[in-house]
Length: 122
Figure (cartoon, rainbow, N blue to C red):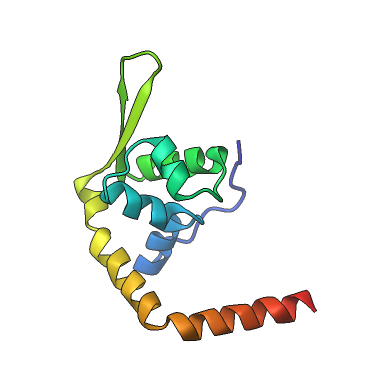
């Protein structure tokens, strides 16, 4: 398991939210759980580029940060479902605002991202 060598800087709100939401798939996971996709297999289908291991790690981190809860049903095979906590639900309007900004600036963002990727590959 990864062990952090340098403690995070937690001096302001941006540092704190970065610590909680840092991770390639966390924002999408929160959004999909909010939409009702609660089982890991459903989340894996929604984010096929993410490995099962990475999803497990990020779901565990979000559980540790009290954004989601994990419920294990005593059946065979085991059934696990994730839900947003009340605290996690407070992030949904923020994520929606970020998504709307991305949609509004989609063309420009795509252009600058592709331009940067092209210059890195040269």
